[in-house]
Length: 374
Image 1: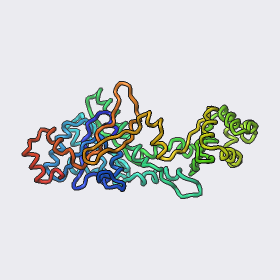
Image 2: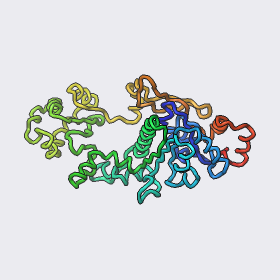
Image 3: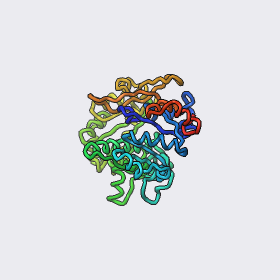
Image 4: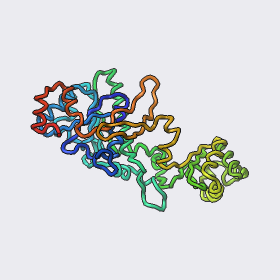
């Protein structure tokens, strides 16, 4: 989707009879298609293709001959068994960039296991760090493993395109949910690798910075981050406790970490006496990093978000208008665009086949033999 947003022509090859499984991951649905599918498939053309049929394979080869990038997320070896592994494809199109996304990667003892977001979050240790110490492990509220793995795939493809500009040769990219999720455990992983001790679940706390967490105020929640001594002094002043700044128990970060529970008892009632707006205003005036804990509805209707064009509307002739998230990358000379609503399964079958130069009678034959999904 990110490649499509930046101008690439994306043809999504989907298997019959229903296409991508995520089309059915609902409710809610829009036009019979899940909002999950809608959220990540704009700007793509849908080709319903039966790769078990010889003529279906022939059509895929025609696409590969013309393509810059092949992106696949089968379990390792599945596409190769169909005749479309990297070795075979690179012989036919040496400039092709071939990106494989899987649960556990193309090598290693777990390579053949199926992988999903929740599995990766748990297995990579992310869930062990998420939530409160007296509660069970928690999943991050969004499909973060899926998302970051897609972003790494995107980065790998862009790097391979840059390398191809110099070498005129494509390459194979191997990205996995497990590797990608593990890579996000930056300073937490280093804590273990250097000390042998893992931080564990800490709620909204930070293991190395105090105060740096979510606080309850009179009408909601705010996040506050105090990362240096200047901010600490200002924070104490805003709370009406200037003497706290020089209290030996809290005078520096080491002492604040050591006396966290006591500090929390002192700070919590002061913040609870403020409204959310008051806490944000007073902290901001003192140049202390602060922000509200918004509901999803609050942030999606926020004027700043709309000023940044982070909510856009697309319209499909079959299922009508649908609002989508906008582009987080703003480029001055080559900006991306949110266009092309998520496709109905097989919506672009004839368009893609005509692009490949097939005449009407041959297209009809593809329908007849079941190479193209109806």
